[in-house]
Image (cartoon, rainbow, N blue to C red; front, side, top):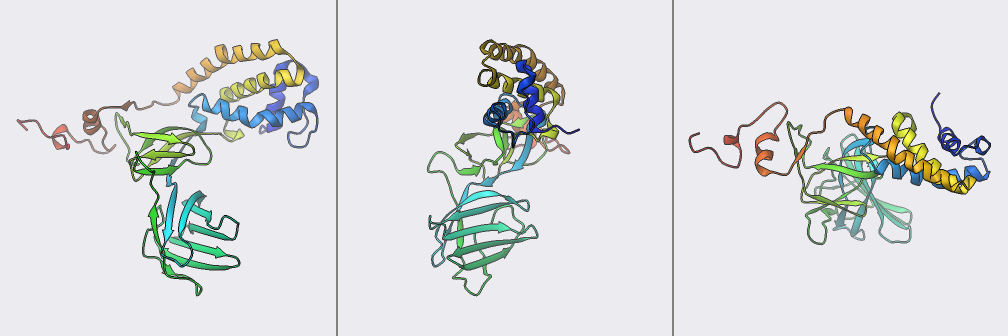
Length: 308
């Protein structure tokens, strides 16, 4: 039988040592234990996900730029922010009026057509362009409705200084792990790309970015050791508000730190081999090549041996 939030909370409550504090339903139970479980469940889950690179939590994605600036129309100039992913493409949407009256949406239907839709107090303009590019094209838009004003142009927003590009973190990202400017498979090394996180954005000097990151796993995908670490930390958070056991909170945290997490890290490390990140232009040029092809040093941009 698949686990539920109720099951996980009851696992945590059982670690406190009092079966009388079990709950019957995570969403509807009105008792003290259930209220405390709802209060602590998601923050504790985010916390345990963030402290380790759990294999069951890893996810990969091609990032979207944070925003684009639209201009050239009669009334739609402004910055359109990344909203989510839809049909496998980034979707952008912003209320340019600030009052809920003028939403501009940029999206792809998944079949090769990008659309800009400008809705303004019941009326709307649309522009379309046939393209399978991952980001919306900057120019070349065609009028898609009778009400449409002149076709707009788009410009990718840039950070104010210090970096060339700004990407939106995935909405489910708890911790970024590795950013690459290419999806090319590598042998022996991974490029040590420069990037930094500011708020919910990643700043980089690459125009394209692929991200490996940690996200909260679905309950069905939770590793057994991850699950044990999660409900033990949740039990520690619940020990005082539910039962008043000060000593039990300390005991559970000590068990988590000294027994559960070391074993979880050990087993987690067995599942695959992580290519080292090499901070060396020479090694990167020499060894970070396609899986199906390896260039020798003489064919790199770093020059050739004098006798080659």
